[in-house]
Image (cartoon, rainbow over all chains, first blue to last red; front, side, top):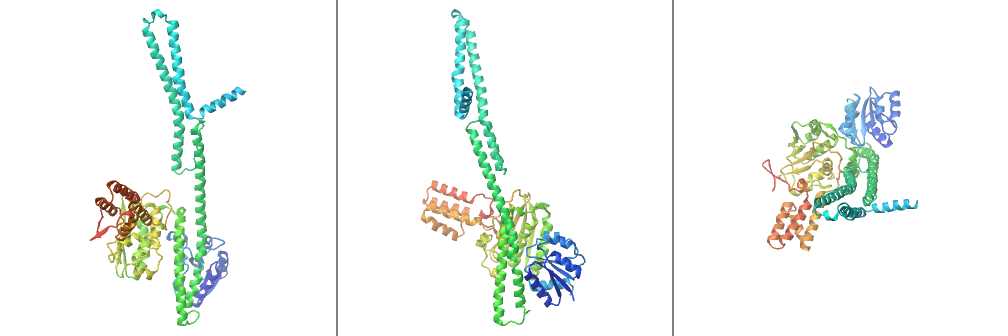
Length: 117
Length: 474
């Protein structure tokens, strides 16, 4: 049973992503911001973190530095340029960029690809 | 004490006008100097030189006269030189200050204390320049506020779309149970309009961001060929859906200062359009080549092509061709307007050529080799062509009365609202004596002024491509 941690400051998005992925058989936990995300990772390491790029609190770039050994996929409402993507992909464990609003099928497909099913 | 005050007020009064100063000068030169000369001459003749010997001493007298006149002349010249300097020097200061302002240095002030009208001018200049500087500062602050506002609201505007679309899709896909047909149909309508709304918001945000984002161009050394390769690779995925092959041809291009994100945006948009309007199993050719002072990009497809009318209007905001592909693929008609905005703000040019409907299209754009110092405001929602047509209509009405409007409409319908066509039309009018030669010339000059700079592509009639060769009109 693969576990996914969904991190987004908007409760509706957390709920929606959780609903989608749980229906596909994943165990999903959620976090509201970067700090809570780090705490939850420390408590029990997920297989994948879906991380919203723009959240209040500690900037995501700082949070990402502290996450190792866990795959990370960024989510973003703002269109990210290719150059910015390169700038954000500073570590090997950053595996994907998901544009919001996403297509449900697309999200599921990407997650399945990342978690190797 | 009183006399000192009176003296200084008197001096102030004399120096307060250039005309007083000059009058004083001429008074000195015209009256005082000759008077001194004549007195001296009189002195010579009546005392030093005895009356009887005047004839013998003629040489002495004449040379003295010449000397006196020379001295007066030289003194006049010297005084005149200094007075004119005192006028021209402050004028030079003012003119230099004005040139500085034109260069963009709006905070310049002048310091002139000649006590006369030029000092008044300098004070007025200083006030004007500080007002201008304030207005400019204001404008910059408003721009900054606009951009900040936009970046905050863009996040807010688009966020609700995510959970909305996610839930709708889950409903549609039966995540919450099977749906009746009516329910499916209803959801279909909702989803479609949610998508439309999302696209409109996106485009609107894009334009607002571009129009306010003069501040946000980030120029850096860019290898445009590498950039093009990346984009072609990226777009290949979409092209494959219609089995279209993307071919990139590049000539060695120097690395220049450009904003890679903006250039990508334009290129991606053009390739996207090319894919959209191409049939399956066709080809799209993309070329980059350096030319004298710019780098030329072109995207060529062999799809539906553009009619001459479309070719002119395709860059207009919200303009979409009467093609079914557009309805199918959505789009708000802003893509090309945004491209034009981006290209022109960097002082590049963008234009299109097409042999006609069904015969494919080539889009060209240029990026200048030398980067732009000050980015021009990008005007996406502004179409130069419509403004030109309005001006032409006015001119026709002025020159030809009420008949002018119907003549204008007729030319418009025949797609003859181009400089050369209008010129030959005016010639016809003159030949039939409807206008006399003078009126004809006036009319022609007005039309020339409206079309302006010949280098502006938008004012040229679209070229025809015959057998892969470009035949330039006229």
